[in-house]
Length: 212
Length: 403
Image (cartoon, rainbow over all chains, first blue to last red; front, side, top):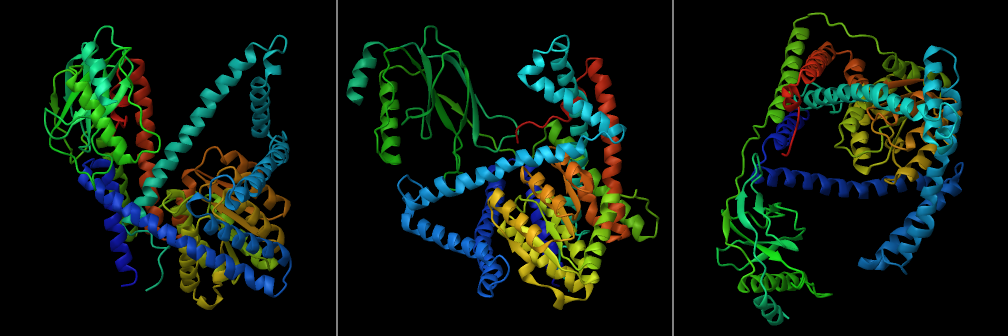
């Protein structure tokens, strides 16, 4: 019973939501919009559970002074401070001059940008490994990467002799082999997605459900 | 202001556009009407007025001012049919603007209702000044089934996949053998769990950073069910790092079920299924922290990833973990290929849970999408040939429009 009822609900709701694509009538879409709103309400409720989980995982480690407990304390204090700032500001919390806005502009945005900027260094280290010409495939990858990278910078276009040809080679690499490979991935992934969706809706796939 | 406008317009009303037609678009949800007209010569712009009550108004400005070269417009008669269901008939009139026609200026700080009232008065003044053409009625038409060629083709493909899947499953149930090629990346998942067990270190599972309704996240949850079962059988620790609270709740249930099915419900630790942050890079920093502090022997990244993919995978590489990744995001695949030991590309991600389950019925269901793939490849060849010969039938067959 514990498995049968979720399977029936999945089948009915799944087929109903697929129907939205083929049934344009606004009366039908009122119901699908209603289901999506239920999903949003559940997702909002899950944020409270996420908050509880954060505290459950990190607070005991702080209380027991486990390794790196200081970082967890900073995280928990930031959580509480941001929460209080959000409540203090009310509806106007996102406007300039409010603590919540200040935290966003001067703490959150720089930290986010810092993490994103790290990507440049990670790309360099990953590219160094990926572009080592150890075999034919890696050599081809290296050659294509060099051609595309050189053609994409202004200096590449100004190179003597090959400056005119490079952008055409780059365009060919991007438009022909690159696009063909991407489309193959997209088609395969789309069919895989349809098959996975149908396996779940038809109840063939049950690994996500608990035992009876 | 309205009186002044009336006087200004009475003095010189421009000739309105002619030949207005109002039609419901095909396969519509019943909330749109398409308008077309012939522009008035010397016009500086066009206003579209709509009435829900009758050909005598009251009128509302539904679109405009439109540039003089524009001769078509689409009107959405209701933005929320739950609170404002569409009427059976609407009336439209067009107003030609000249350079002297005053623009409608909304009063700063006015409420939405006050603005609507002022706009209605503005439209009414334009009509009374004789600047509007004749009223034309239009009937919205809601369709119960989209019969366009593209939609029918897609429905046929979905039915074909579903039908073939049921047929192959039925064959497998009767004992027919099913061959499926070996996928090293999937085999490596069990090897990775074994390695973590030998080293006495945890396995880290990251189900991407997208919402639960994304099909890649759903596939990842299905795989997590199999992975947690194997982890429980090996008596190893499994840490699941989640970016979305809803995903954490589902992952928690899935891992609990996996441990239960493996016969080790007591080994399940709910504190190992963690919500980190719903912000992309805060989540990345938190997950990197888990890697560097708890030193998992195996990192499994399966789901939908964006810019964080390489930051995660490079940290795992520095940590000397075995790394298995899988995503259908074509832009992130090169990063995973560069930094991980095994990468599942596109459709392979969707095959993992069936492959890991070793259930012949599930494995045989993979065959269905393979057959449809063959059909699509044939269509691509035929379509290329047909397009070369000047026929666009296959292009139309697979073009999805509207809906």
